[in-house]
Image 1: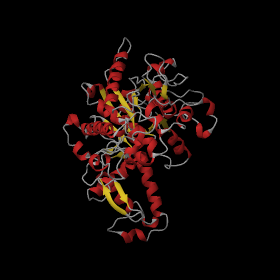
Image 2 (image 1 turned 45 degrees about the horizontal axis):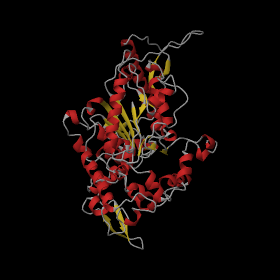
Image 3 (image 1 turned 60 degrees about the horizontal axis):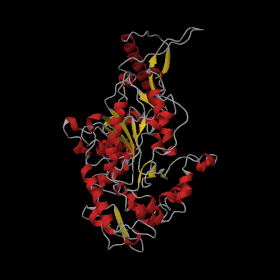
Image 4 (image 1 turned 90 degrees about the horizontal axis):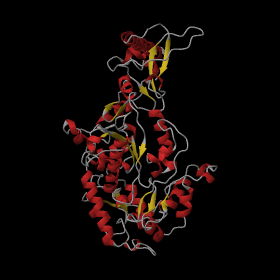
Length: 519
């Protein structure tokens, strides 16, 4: 398992010290002196103190994509867990390259969940299934449960369905996973440079990890990538490289800006100071309080420019309003944001103000260099388009032209598992742009059911039919609830009978005692 962080989630250091000790430029370690303050807990306070006094020119000089590289010397956990027996292994796995407060808690949980709960899936606490079992005799220790195959499992937090259909998890999947160890690695990258360079670095890390895990006691041929935000773009670019689609078993994308993020445009124009409460204002001290501070770094960083909305983003996403607040027009009108917005130097709503490109004590950035960096971003966007790994899962994200992706040949199909609740706003915007109802096809049926007027309880909510409303209207109060409870009990008994039969087929004794196994 290799985790790829988002933009600004990797530690950076200077690379122009002529062989001397490289100085940390962007170190996301937590400050132990401030952990007792709730608002400062798990926050890079030391980085905040350095950046709070930095002017636009200072930021442009220190955060230049050609003057920094990945810093592997960040903080790592002190306790062992999972498949890690010596805390020094965390550094060898690349955990020091990524932000401590943002990611280490998640990676520790993932390492323990995948590798620290034994080889018996029946004892894994995240998964559950109902079963029949005999109660132990007095003084007798309960036997270790076994997980029979062919049982539908439930996972805490897993929804019943997603955009691609129902989510089905069976005990066979867990039994197969129990035969594997999945050590958790991390791969930081220079998020100021192009994501193509980051993809090449990820490719080298994948090859190194596969080679390191092929020895006398284990075999490894493929990896699974877990990404956050812009790390998803890096992973998608990596799987396009030679041999990588076969070396990657699958990719899980979280919060990936598949077609860009309009908030990147907003921050480049006005900064981040007014985005929220105290945490957002603290983050703005690091990222940029004003548009001038943000633009000084943003315009010279191809990686940051690759977060802008692409040509696939919905048309008219930028609304231009007059002094009274009335909307005058929307952009991009031609569907090309590079021409209509990003390269416009004669309109106030263009992405970049020329006078902000070269602040005092800056690196001398000019419009020509900015145009060159923007060209790299456009080339990167055009290269990705709708190209996803064949085994891709997405949560809290969106992929355009999903119906076209599903019509690819079998070897190129996109297995997209996006949570319906998370993708609904983006799906509604896409549907409105296409002149449809605003709900994706998978959600229309459920939305229509929710919009129906509620059936009164005394009408028998579970048995009322349109062709016989009067028969149920005369039932006394609570009759429908009693009928519903009877049906639930019959359904429960039917499920238990089926599970007893499955256990008998698997050789497990069945009895009348009922318990709830935790797997």
